Length: 126
Image (tube, rainbow, N blue to C red; front, top):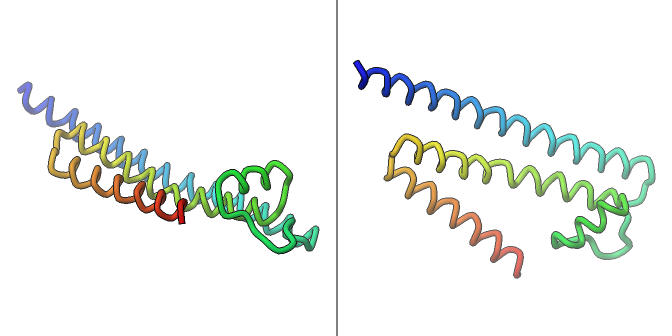
């Protein structure tokens, strides 16, 4: 009887985690689209990207550009959020597999997460 309750609780937790992942993905895409939309509207209104020759290519420049309301920096922030959305999904999946005690998939998703972070670091330093 207790084994059935444990299994049922585990299944309920899995459903909750899957629903949470779905909500996070939808929220991430909607927020990203909204930020990009604001940047595009700002660009269309001002007819100016906010930059003359160079564009922001690192986090510091993007955030400085957003703080000064430069349209291209706002669009870049939206794209950055869009890229981070599936990365967050991988992190949550790793947690979900940990809760299920599925160690093989915890290892696989952890490796994928590490590879994603390494690729970000390589792209950032290049």
